[in-house]
Amino acid sequence: AAVLGLESSCDETAAAVLRADGTILAEAVLSQLEEHAAFGGVVPEIAARAHLDHLPRLAARVMAEAGLGFADLAGIAATSGPGLIGGLIVGASFGKGLAIAHGLPFVAVNHLEAHALTATLPGLVEGGARFPYLLLLLSGGHCQCVAVEGVGHFRRLGTTLDDAVGEAFDKAAKLLGLPWPGGPALERLAATGDAARIRLPRPLLGRAGCDFSFSGLKTAVAHAVARHPPGALPEADRADLAAGFQASVAAVMADRARHALDMLPAATALVVAGGVAANGAVRTALAGAARERGLPMVAPPIRLCTDNAVMVAWAGIERLRRGLTDPLGHAPRPRWPLDQLTA
Ligand code: ATP
Ligand code: MG
Ligand code: FE
Image (cartoon, rainbow, N blue to C red; front, side, top):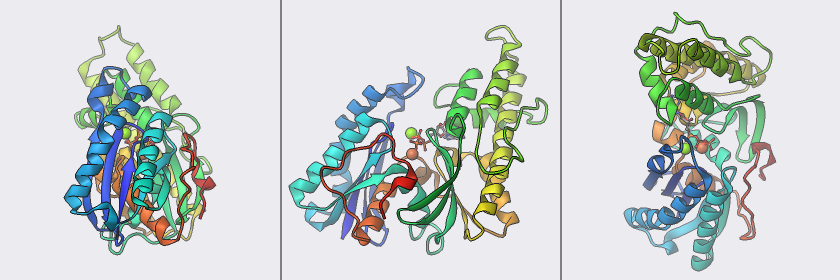
């Protein structure tokens, strides 16, 4: 048996078919970068319409690629929150429609649980990560340290007091005149800069707990930029600011991860997920923090760190295996914290 997963919570439209043992039979992701780039960020209404345009075709494509008919499926899993409500309604309604049409169980997947469970995909790491592990969810919308104790069993240990880390990358990049989405562009610019020349703050470093804060760091970049007339920031300063910003984030991440590992002594691994997990400096810093504890750092391949439907199908499989399905009346939830999941 296999499961069809659907993702539409933000600006990625995605579909994937996984066999119950976790084998990926087919996957497809469409990023709506062009649709939103002119606006410098995701426009919810545009995103919802794009999901509506693309999702049925993507679903048909992955089913064909997997060589399966709906009769071969054990269920349909669709992201049902948290995220932008328009896209969630599109994806969840489409998934429910397929479930009704083909008499299949429906699983309303929590997007954060899907990110969190990606590390347990067999084949990703030797045998998959084992519970409990520490998850650092580092994305455009979230920045959390989470104790992952099992399917549906999560404890949030810390979160951001202001911006998510990806959001901070995007804002700093914008201040430096880089195009959206800023994270990857900032990383490329940082590679040409000197991280030590312009010292930027490292918010909450050394503080108890594992919360995050990025607004002070972003403001420091803004002040550094504002010292020059508009558009006249010297090229070397731009690169050095990018490098300094990235170094601050990486240092803060490692520090927060150490504190989080102290709060979860039973952790078997440090798992990173979310788009910012693609950042080389952040990865290196976190790998160092894990190594100090003799733990492996598990970072899924980048395509499975950013939004995708493989993780949604996999969360669906883990839930179906435990008999956890959802009624067709399940309403999508724009806010849906991990500690409010059923298990
Ligand atoms: P969420 O999953 O929380 O709903 P999202 O869909 O915006 O939010 P992702 O798609 O996982 O999150 O990640 C996108 C974020 O990751 C953006 O903020 C982007 O700038 C950032 N990002 C991507 N690549 C890099 C990189 N190499 N370095 C730093 N940040 C990056
Ligand atoms: Mg995205
Ligand atoms: Fe995500």
